[in-house]
Length: 282
Image (cartoon, rainbow, N blue to C red; front, side, top):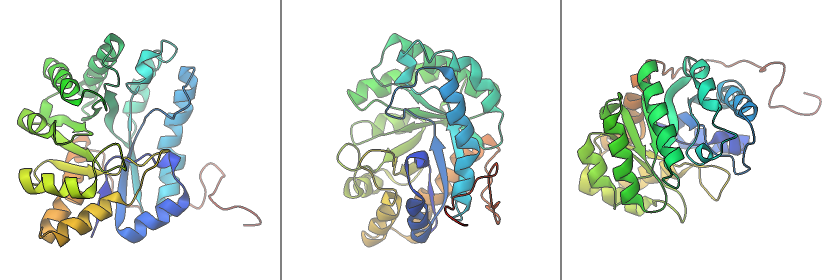
């Protein structure tokens, strides 16, 4: 089973996770830029973070045979902090980088006017740079959040079929599917989907345009949830081709819209800017 996790925050994870993911079949990941828990206070902290997503983290992933790409954006939660808004002016210099395969995560957290403005501006940046967009739907009032998201997308210059609407569930999947967008589902303990519900939705709606991710981050989460979904799909009678479509070909197709997806890890460099993942005398 080959697995592409299309939404995972590896900056928050350990090298043990990379090792376990590779053993489970994960060969590619996309890491969306997101809120780190501790609020940022300036655009400079975003720049250092973006640089790590483009440098250190791909290096770390390559040590374990995993291709790493990222998406870059001002996330919706911090779009409400005026101190962070100047980062919008910094984004164009990052959106031309080879390993950036989408603008994201963008979207809604609390559905404020500031989030409206940031979402519209970044959808335009995606259109200007020929990139797809990864859109975070809110964890509260999900159907209203989805509808508001789709309204802004339809008003933008970015075609809906170049948008991945993430964190969907049973309440939002039908309207998202009918919009023509790609469909993202996060299998995440307690707060999002689980394997059983995910497989039930796949049985009802089919695998077309569906991407399943772990969204693993600094919270209680499991970077092997993608594998667990694949195993349950097989146990519930899905064929290997369906599993491969959901866990590999669909993410490749969506992020391939960027024209930048490179899945050959190669042998990897021994160090990154003079640093390695080794410690001690080595």
